[in-house]
Image (cartoon, rainbow, N blue to C red; front, side, top):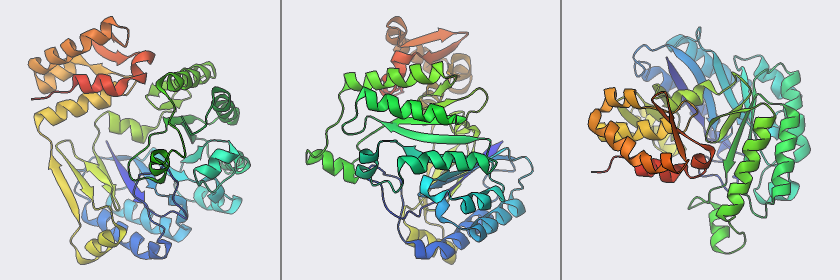
Length: 376
């Protein structure tokens, strides 16, 4: 099995926290779609004949594309990859783009999952983040998506936002739960260098929440969603039974994927590739037949480290016998030795030969994973 990720870089405006590659050059969409289809065609051997089970349109804002754009892309996918076994086809969407007419368009295409970037229902915070929608539009977008026939809806939330209180975060969570999406992604705000909100932090225009407050938000998140019937299956992801994101889960399980579009990453099990993070350079490169990208071949140490990071993110955990088979007894013993203090401290647990993070461990997952990495 394999997945395909398509990066659509266009945005009407840039949100203050976003560090993904995007552009407001919407007038270049036609050339971008042509370049994207060209990349899909020329890289059809990358997945080595693995059947494609998931396709994910991310961004940027994929809902900046129109029906004809999607039709060209899907025609290319059918021609060169086949979509007969494609079980999940996701599109990321901004709430204000999901009008009745646009949803009818999406429903007429092969999409069967929509991921809606709500982030918060708090109006002043939406304005601070430079989001284009209101809370009412977010609620309406979920309702309209359901009425359009989408039976697999995900919503994104962010917590740890400037000025956030436990009461406000609880209101966001309860509103999301009332909408009953099949999937909820909840990310703690990070101040990425180079983003407007990072500059606001440095200028003391906003304040970062402290660790104790963050822990309280995380406990509230996990408690409320668990009581509402959601499974916490990955550090930032929750779903109703059986409704996990197949595409993202494949990333964490080390399944090969092809990434097309500017800044998109690909993985074939042995190496990683990433396209240039520039729309102009990407288009010009594809038009000239010289795709601008870089490649990294993954040595044993790197593959071990990625195995630790990706498996520990999930409820399925890190299988120590598989680790031994793939990377040798020395690394398995090292992993168990480094995990021992966290096992004793209740931050990790071991059951049936599998290491997993506890809730307390998930909160400090970066620290734990760092300690388990192989360093020469």
